[in-house]
Image (cartoon, rainbow, N blue to C red):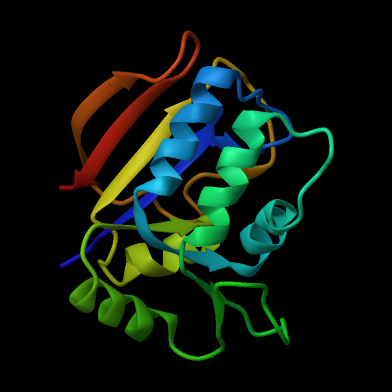
Length: 176
């Protein structure tokens, strides 16, 4: 049975914004290793559209970026959207019941499945499907933006803390 994990970079005041928080090389390599080890990812439309950047090679990329792109392209992806008509390579469009899909994926896959996007994560939290929350805290205060938790924060229990880089700590929580 697979474990469903929701993890994102987050500011100290609880917001997620990949453009406003630097991902230094050590953290970038951490994310590459994370993606390499996934059984797959479930995306909301907005996060998927952001991540589509990795579908095409860019001449300015170094080895780290190429490694992340290769890992992202290899993993199976399921994209929950009512507005997209198509999705890219190695992705499946989910127009129906994403909760039922995730229940099925958890039952038949092994390893970790990442959920990407706060709104999608909230709907899966409401269905009691997320097994672990990973908050990658950056020493930044954004003051506004998209919150990590799109709704009420569920009762959580801290199970681990890890220094991921010189500036970023990962807090791992499970439902209480």
